[in-house]
Length: 156
Image (tube, rainbow, N blue to C red; front, top):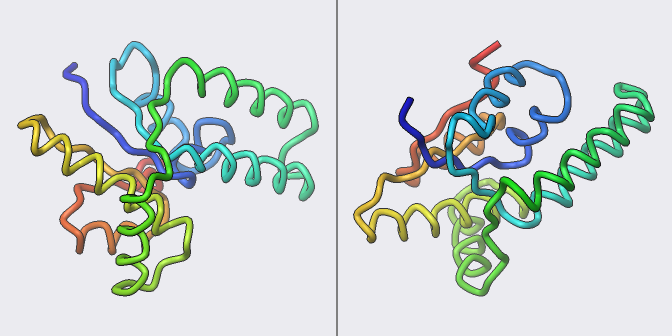
């Protein structure tokens, strides 16, 4: 199996920690034996923690599952994910995206982060990344911006 470069937004990454449509597919991509490079924005960790806390409050996951998921997220933060930081260039590109597309602020940051890394990969004559999101609107906008995308919800 050849390895790929994936950028996971929060809606894709959370599927690793909570069982829902697309979770098995995401888990296969992020499995260390797949040797894929996994990228995300640093703020994804905050968004993922928010999603896990919300699910705990809504009782869609148990307290024990919440503790386990938060622990696994923390562990993998240090061992598997490579982060795009919220630097000035990402902020400005996110702002430009907001001027042209109906995006939420964090979605603009996610897409700007992926676009910045993708440009760097292509400039270095490396394969581009695949932007993973379960958000149909964000996926459509990413495709308008010439980003290769996939949606874990297509893989039940």
